Length: 77
Image (cartoon, rainbow, N blue to C red; front, side, top):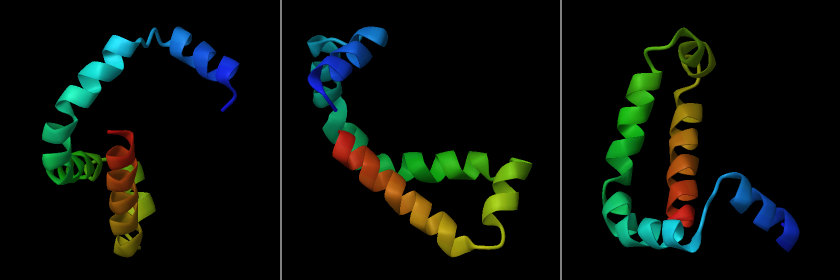
């Protein structure tokens, strides 16, 4: 992402260095509980009709999405 676009995005969401410092401070705790957070999220999502329509016929797809979600959050944190 070009630097000016990055800065525009940070400004749009009012993200500052202090925000990233707070995220880094809690990252170890969040990573430790990440699998539980993801499981809870997808359990909640599983109560929605649209979710069932997309994932019911392909449990392997759901597992892959969970893995990708974990990888994404781990990279972010």
